[in-house]
Length: 288
Image 1 (cartoon, one colour):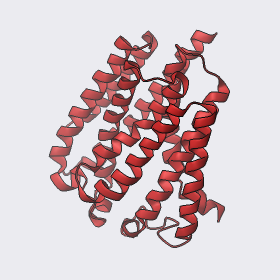
Image 2: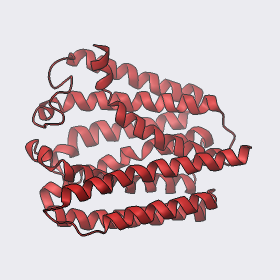
Image 3: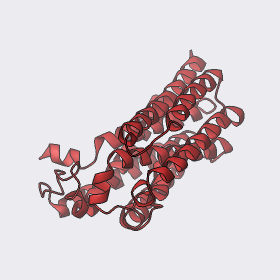
Image 4: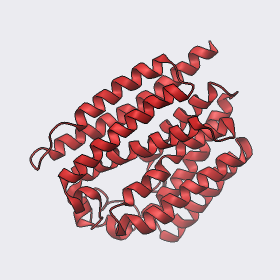
């Protein structure tokens, strides 16, 4: 039973988002005072709120989850977890996470995480995901909130650096999500989810992905020019952006799109882990 309740929080998604939270936190901590306890509180608070959003997503999507091969065995889709209990569980997680950020970080970070939650639950899950090809774009807004919350937990104010960080992760979400939609194309067709590769075709999705990767690279490098990152960040960012751009600009067609999209997806994960890692390394070098 505990395993089922853990599974509906989507631990993989939580872990991926916490990497971006750490990136925002490390970036802000280069110029503002921070502590390990604040980092842990921020990670826990954001993690609980993301878990709550994932539970609500599982509740609302259980009718389409049964149509998709990769989701048909989810605990809410197959009835292993009671819907009413899951909803209470989601509320407890939401209130716990928000309270942690409010009490141990600052009110601004708590408000920001709630705004991200609203975009994910109401605008993405309950509205645009099922009705519009722009659902991915709406979802990217909520997906870019965790690193911003990590940043605000330290600074308690919004700066140009914070805006660049938010824009960078918004742009990252798009090709990352389209890549997933491509190698899971049949699942999205079965569930009638109108993602761009399904509705408009692989060629158009490819053009969009190339534009987003280029835009991401520009913003990521602009963070070096207008933020507090160092030359280590510049070198690592330039390298991973080159890798992602090179992979994304490769020719794709109906014969190779699955293999191609998996490659783009894997490199997108490497990009996030690399950026977070190098920001952490730069912070450590400042404190030693």
